[in-house]
Image (cartoon, rainbow, N blue to C red; front, side, top):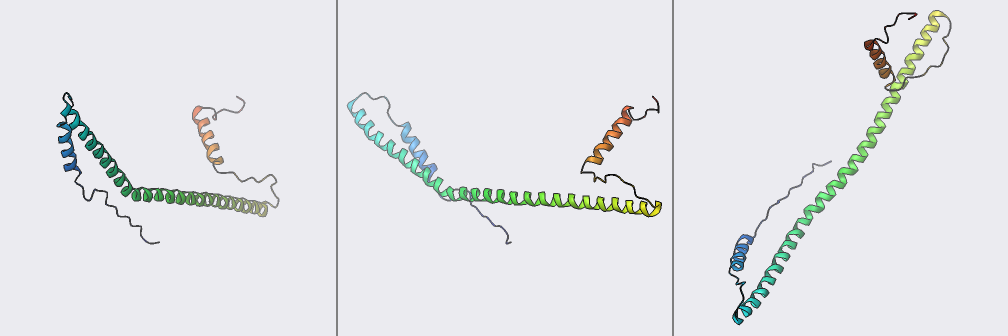
Length: 162
């Protein structure tokens, strides 16, 4: 696999927004909101048109900036999809590996039991009967923990007949 390379420039490359904003704010502060004369209303009507135009310009600029950032959002979305697919494949493999390791462990235990049984038969000349169950993962650990608990709690140290 080739190296993954992603280079982004997450900054505004050119903008006159600060100057534009400062000019608009200065105009806003100069707007007469105390309309009393006919001239004030005529001027206000022209200012309303200019302010609507400023609002539209700001909204269009914002949409343009968002559209330019859409490529980055699509990239992030694609990365998330691939990460999840990779995770699912990894988890499936980990489950299979864990199951196979358990299977090998159980086969080794079964071979050891059979080897010990064969040695006993060869040494004593007779077979020990009984079900040969392979302890499952955690069974031995759990019984050891119970035995240790019984010893520490005094339950396991009883004298015969008591």
